[in-house]
Structure formats: C-alpha cells, structure tokens
Image 1: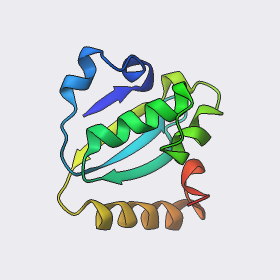
Image 2: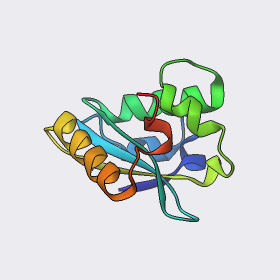
Image 3: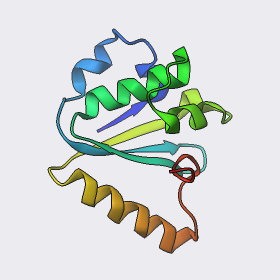
Image 4: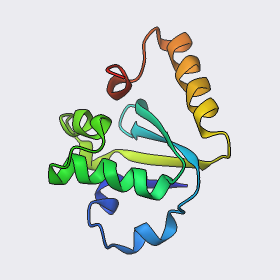
Length: 113
C-alpha cells in the first residue's frame, strides 16, 4: 500500500481510513529519484504515520525522522509504502541492514537514530 505525503497532510482525509492500526514497517521514498528517505516501524502503523505527519507539518515533536524529512525539497510529493508484518522490529532492522550494505550508509532520516 502506498500514499503520497500530501494526501495524508489533512489529518481527517479519507486516506487515513485506508491505513490500518496494525504492526508494520513503512518506508518513505522520494518518487523522483526512488531514494529511500526513511525506514520506520510501529506496533500501530496508523498512529505512527500520523505522528510523522504531525511532526513534519504541524510542529509536533513525536517523530524525529519526520522533522528531518520536512527539510527536504519536494517533501509533499514523497510517498509512504506500508507493509503490515508481525515482526516489525526485526523487519525494520533487516531493511536498514540491506540498505546500508547496498549504499554504504543509512537512509537520510535514519542517520541520527
């Protein structure tokens, strides 16, 4: 499942009904160059992505990756891909490890973690 950031900016939009409150891993991608900007995980994916949006657009301080992403050009056009999994912590670590092996560093907004 994939959404554009600007679709989720309005917190009461219909797009939020399509995101489940399940455990999962989500990836923020710049669609222009297909660069992975951030890999995150949560027991409640819907709540965590709302925290990312609130931090990025409304000044909340609940998602530091969201704060870093907001500083990037074209942030509104970034996409969030969601995969619902039961082992979200292990899956996130696997994806971060795979990314680091391929590119020699972590995604932009994961670097401070």
